Length: 276
Image (cartoon, rainbow, N blue to C red):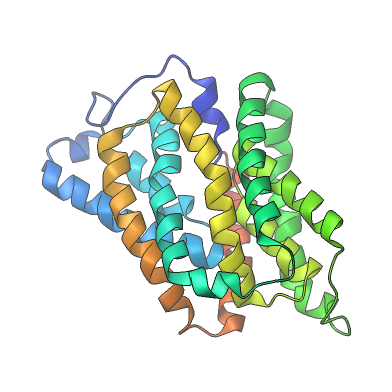
């Protein structure tokens, strides 16, 4: 989910259950509301791990259940961090087996990139960048769709480490600054720039983007933009879904996940073009 809306709306301090809550849901039991947010977190983490589109589930759920959009944006970013942690616990052994590039530099790049992106968020006007994001996501989606053909005859092709880490740094800064479609971009980098197959790219994507997004989450917490009730409910569900997602991935054929990433990227492109 794009982070910029939260940064722009410094005057918006509405919290969960405020007067802006939809009338249809105003009388809903808090227990039911938080249960629905928990389920949204479970589904969001699974979708996010497999195809990188977690916010297409959790953010609309928060808004539908009465969290103002700006607060929902920030709360959503915070709530999805546990999902990344849960996924990392389950997939750690597989992550350690991906040895195309040293892991420590990638971790540092993810953390620092997120911090740089979060800092840029405070000082750089987002308008022009927002206009090109849908097309950037679309380009990455097309590259992912074509990756099997592009890699024919070059199955063992691998970018030099400086080139891979530089492109990764750009994606991590983008993730901390804006966020939407960062999963698709990193997936494209892994599947086109390395010999990683779809399953390996999925395993690599989630922890790196979680580290980058953690920086943005800290920024939102400091700004006081988080609805902790909603964030905790989704966060608990996110951890459960994130823990289960790598186990689910092992049951799904690689071509199905690849197709799901492409479809998800197209859906996200339309979603961004329509301004949601």
